[in-house]
Length: 430
Ligand SMILES: [Zn+2]
Image 1 (spheres, helix red, strand yellow):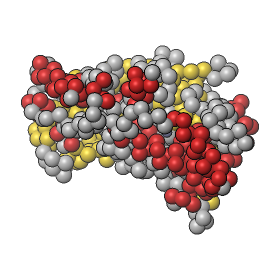
Image 2 (cartoon, rainbow, N blue to C red):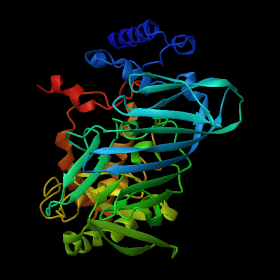
Image 3 (tube, helix red, strand yellow):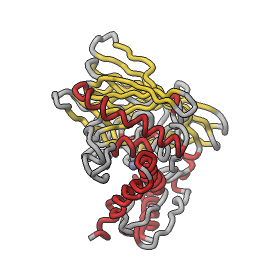
Image 4 (cartoon, rainbow, N blue to C red):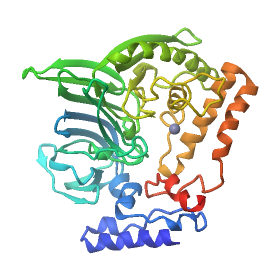
């Protein structure tokens, strides 16, 4: 009940800030009832703007993004522009995109015209000169820049991870699941809309390498001689939060996986130069793991983009075709979690499972995140069964049993970008 009241309050606030009628005329998205459990949780206007699907969002369907970005690690600063190609789903004159309020917008243009916009919390409402017709296609360009938020505890909270490697050289990662891709680039930040493909073009000081999603199309040294640009292309639909960068002194090595039907998958690894030997040994388990997953679920889902692991200064994340790896080449989860007599890298096995449940099969609202996490936990167990046998699979899943405490619903409230199951459960855990 309290939750509904807060949503109502959010809409009253919207009214008070003189937002035009199309927003306030809409009822809040329906929220499933879970007794009083979520009554403890307070949702803000920003949560509602991020999580709900109003006509300003349902009116268009993004099919392609181009992110052109310059990253200056020394200043912890980014600037660039995004081209957003979209198709109109129902007649609309006002669109909502999202960009965190700490980043500045320089201008927004479509068909050569500057467009007026209004920023409310982390949402950006853009007014078009005339109503767009259903089925028409358009490109909007947003120029922006600033200092993106830094993650305090990635990957559990979102932001840039500005780090140094063991040789005191720049090492940068980005984690934004839950917090949202709009913390670093403007986009329609709702899980219900994935682009069909995306270009990620990033410029950095030339001593650094940029690893990202999909395939590296081009590496260009700029005329100024101190910067380099890396163009990565994703050729499949992708969740916005899966787009990421690894920036560092990487070496690249590769391998292949041969599927049951003989088709060959490219495996690419980007690791800190001094970790190459450890990585070559640790990543030998990728092939047998892909065979286990192929046995139960079919081929790796993003074949043309290849499979990749990118060493990152945080534990891990399922970034599509560019998995963030930070398990320090240890067994289990930083050395623990799995039975003592087993030897497999939890982060490789878990995050790769998400390529199926999370990246290929994706939820449309964060409230349903159990679909990503529970099925991936099940996949870990199947991996153990394929490699060691059923008895050991049951023994492994037994190590997860103590985490099932019946503390909180696994389905969160929808329409508010809910991603806080852990924090909600603490008062009950005491
Ligand atoms: Zn997971």
